[in-house]
Length: 99
Image 1 (cartoon, rainbow, N blue to C red):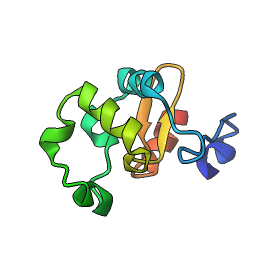
Image 2: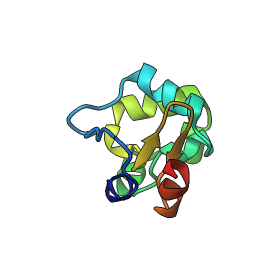
Image 3: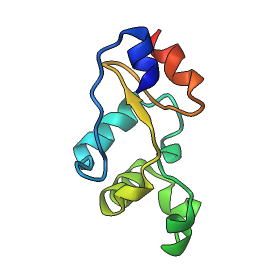
């Protein structure tokens, strides 16, 4: 991430397709998330193709289940620190978190 590099912050990039988070990792992100947990789920063409609705991702357990089954629906980037997690859009949020 360019912003982390600019700020001189050590970071680890995780390719969610090659190394998808398991249920425990997703729960850990949700526990730290400043955003509504439902925002972790992308509402894109795959979401529609799967015929999902907001009711299908209304609870944390539903969110975990959907993201474990359909890793492509994980919103990105997700930036996680020791205490906080955010969805890194807009990118200025990443700068604020890491500064």
